[in-house]
Image (cartoon, rainbow, N blue to C red; front, side, top):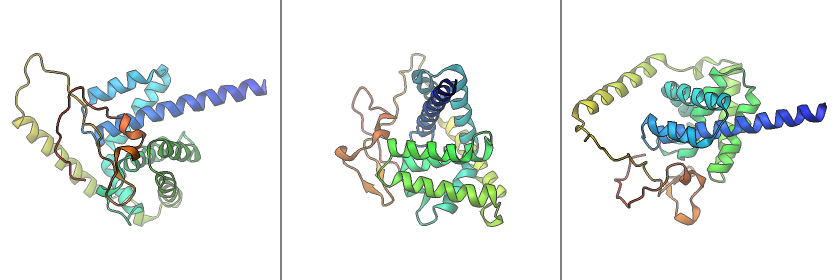
Length: 230
């Protein structure tokens, strides 16, 4: 009986890991690829998760997206030695996702949420990603969740301003957007042909690219994309 329970728990943890991996890929597409929610739905479907785990992944992404301006403040506080915009994109997205889970899904033990983020950092990041993500999340757990130190609490007014500014820009873009043809081609995701590596805005060559390049695949036809400001 003990062995059966152990195997069942192992399968459950593996399934939750795959759900978090899918959630990470979906949030990466939203935050870094600036893709539409439709694409995240396709990514979730392709993950082939059981309904319970698919619902968990979807809840993670929706929650992390809704709280992204709050978790951005936390990232800026706990990674203050580096500019937020110049952090390695994989590290940044993993921190958004894990901080949301740690704070808003307390049914997940903190140790598991942090370990899962570290494993994904090993899989998709650079050699520096795992220790960096682990250190930031451990500080977040201790100072925000356990000790509730006032200096690390979010600025609600700043969060509201950031949200309002985002909604204003989105509304302006919607007004100026050109009407789409009836038979519009399927939008192509932004390719990740250059990753901003480690903590120093270093261009990574193709031989060094990480597994994150698989999240946003190359389009079928070669296109030239303008360089995005990081």
